[in-house]
Image (tube, rainbow, N blue to C red; front, side, top):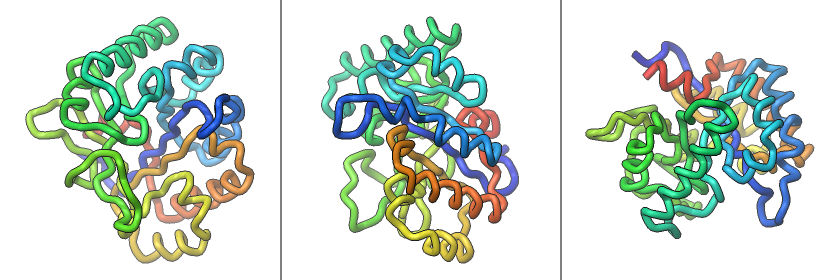
Length: 244
């Protein structure tokens, strides 16, 4: 049975810095995690294999408080890979994950949310219990290159499958509660939005490279206050899996 009350699934895509070669965002990730600790927010960190390989000690530290899930090995977009290449991405990540944590990863998120039915089937074949790649609706004025097609706005199991899909749902008009949007939209907008309408299930997502932006960190702190005010219960991916 789904949990009672309003749910917010909180996550970070932990990956190489956007547009440049480097991992400054990963190295400064604690700036975001410290804000999560301040408000006692559980979260899922979708980590690439490259990050896990390079920052094993950091990942072990993160795992003490947060769930570590799969964001592929190399962060290549799945629409550029054939089935065998996708299989290798998963195999290499799972083997590395097991060597670091002595267990298998439960969750997955595709880079840029680009996934299709074959991709979700491949996840199930490789033992993943949930996926969080699908964006079920998106602002009509913004081009979206990820999953195409309608999907439920709350966690669901695709027809004929056991894997749970935790969709990345937005607010009104599909406006997502995500890094770039949080930084770009004024705080009063979110105050008004959640005062008027607070959906039963929402997602709060960001990237590791958001940690290097002081304005973003300040805004994130205030957004969490708004969600706390609206009585959202924060859950990570594995917690949602247990409830659905």
